[in-house]
Image 1 (cartoon, rainbow, N blue to C red):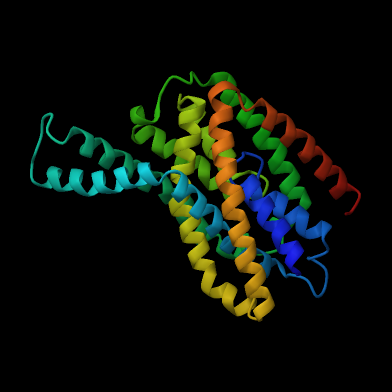
Image 2 (cartoon, one colour):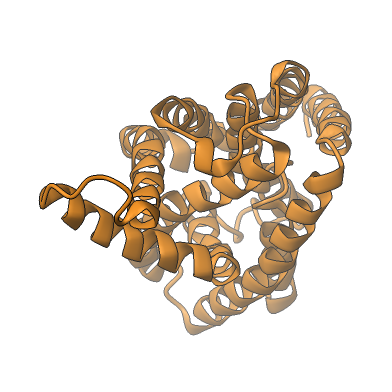
Amino acid sequence: MNLLQAIILGIIQGLTEFIPISSSGHLIVAQKLMGLDKPGGLSPEQMTAFVAVIQLGTLAAVIIYFLSDILTITLGWIQGNLMWLQGHRGSRGYNARKSARLGWLIIIGSIPAGVAGLLAKKIIEGSLTKSLWVIGTSMVVWAVILWIAEQVGNKRREMEHAGLREALVVGFFQVFSLIPGSSRSGTTIAGALFSGMSREAAARFSFLLSIPIIAASGLLELREAFHILSDSTSMVNLAVSTLVSAVVGYASIAFLISYLRRNSTLLFIVYRLIAGVGLLGLAYKGW
């Protein structure tokens, strides 16, 4: 992999991690288009490690964008739980307890995908998840599911109204993001819409829920990436790609939240259908 290819992968990661069109699916297709899956390129395990690490760039983007919310939730989680242990009730510390509640919902919502990711680590890293049949099918299936969520969700609940049910539903949907082509943001936004959240609240909750999962997968693969991408050129490419994904990812978050305040996810649904059908056609022709 050369530096230009690394920059391209960083741009794709930053653009597609938060927009519900599947970052892993696009990265795998880009890898094939650039010939990185050929002998002398990247093995499935190397590509998985590379992607997991450059996701740390998009993790930095979401942390910077939501820094105020993250600090409020973290400090409120500590203060609210201490007050609960001390037996404080009533109106005192209401904001801290509200932040603590949201913090617990993020933790609970992250557990299903975290457990599934550890159990299915070998499958995720293998060649099956790099198949265009898998990616194309996931693109189409989750386009349909996202469209159904748009139709049946009442879109009235804001993030502060979320409870255990919403966290479990969105957390369960996030498990499917482990399948390339599904999209982590796409699956979690669909789950949030099914739970009755507004589109903007669904996106915000999806982004906050991404922090533990992206951090865990990126840090888990980081040490392994140093071994399988050991030469200095690979490390430079990895660093540059991660930085590019952070900058582009920040812009993507700002765009999607602004867009969903006034629009539905129909644009992304149509794109997923077209891209998914196109990939299935290429797979059928043996590409």
